[in-house]
Amino acid sequence: MFDLGTSFIASVERDPDALAIVDRDVRLTYRQWYGRISALVAALDVAGLRNGDHLVTVLQNRWEAATLHWACQFAGIIITPINWRAKAEDIDFCVQDAEAKAVFYQDVSAVAVASSREAQKVITAVANRAVLILGRFSETPRKAFLEALANALRDRGLLPIIYDFERPPEQDWTETVLTLANLSLFVIADITKASSVPLELQASVPICMVPFVPVHKKGEPAFSMFKNLQKKYDWVLPVIRYSREESIVAAFDYAILTPALEMRRRLKQRKAEG
Image (tube, rainbow, N blue to C red; front, side, top):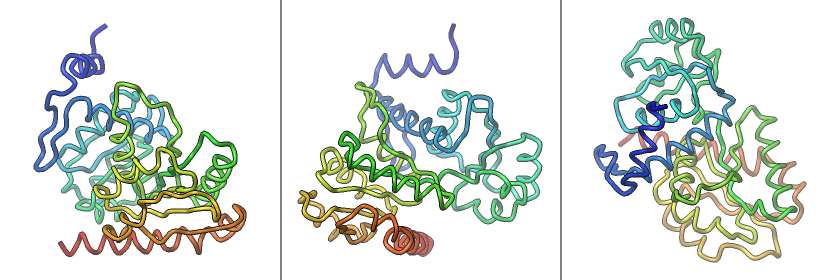
């Protein structure tokens, strides 16, 4: 059976290093693009969207929109695209008519989406609620701690994305991290006994202007090059050092959430100012 999905996969397998996307300064090969699409499929699942669900997009005709369209194709999600210049009443009609469970939008359409009563009733973009968690999931004590952080996020209505799923061997996993980081409100990175986290941070921090919140258990080895990232990129927040896992979970709002959201606000203001 030949469909759009198999057609895309055939292109990836036939010439993975061929140029697939050229959009201003963004240039992606089929291999890289497929990595980002796959990561977005995982993020859609984290957001609770399933095969047969409907979502509405209010996006510009850029590479992000094309990536989302392909992710929905692979996930079996039905997409209703509307122009990014749409007014609140247009969004109201489309969300209600499609019985959409999500609305994906960009900054240019944020005012209209915020003014849409129907859009506010559904999930309004993964980027408004998702938090990526990076860490050493192969070690039981570290995994238990990271799961506790994920539960703290859920208790506050946020969507933790735990980067602990299987990495396809034919894909560049750094592309997956980049995609998930760009989708996130902020990123929590456990740099205690870090293994793959240093590479993930070196790949994502310079490109993804989102708050990164590093945590480290006192007395344990840490990512030695981390200070260099902090000096160069101010969206990397000061390291939160702790002795007991329970203490950082108990102080979650003060230690992690409030500083991350404040940095998010400052970055948004910086982008608006040009």
